[in-house]
Length: 221
Image (cartoon, rainbow, N blue to C red; front, side):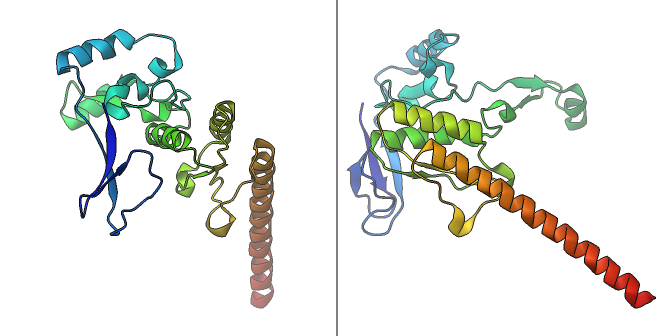
């Protein structure tokens, strides 16, 4: 099986590992895989056989289906692992929705508590295979990547002898400050600095409010 990147505008085809984010015409690129050699029944049997196997790839609820996700990945996936989140029955919600057999998919059981782990494992794996020197993860403040998982990804990347720097967006740290050093130690220092900076800003804001209240009381007197 092979995979290529195809421009959504002009139809130009690029290598699967081409690092460009857009076609030369400006169009966005999408990945396309050749159809699997196996038929649907055979694939389903294969996926079921992998269930419960203890190696990293098959522990992942993403890479267990690698023939459909990234057929060329081999054993090179960067995985925590992620996925395999539970289906949970909640009778009160099912009753409210008038759906007696309703179950909820709890994506909070992913390594960082977010469904985005599923996409990130594929993105970081692709960066690794393309020998990228850096990756950037930009997330909303409410969904900032958890540091322990970032540590795991960095460690895994270095173990694969690929110089990947995982740029973290943590604790609402955005804009021009979204830069982390090129090692785990630098990243740890930067996270600590960000925590301290936020702590100081919070204290300053609290102090300003207190001063404003005192000034307001003085004016009333």
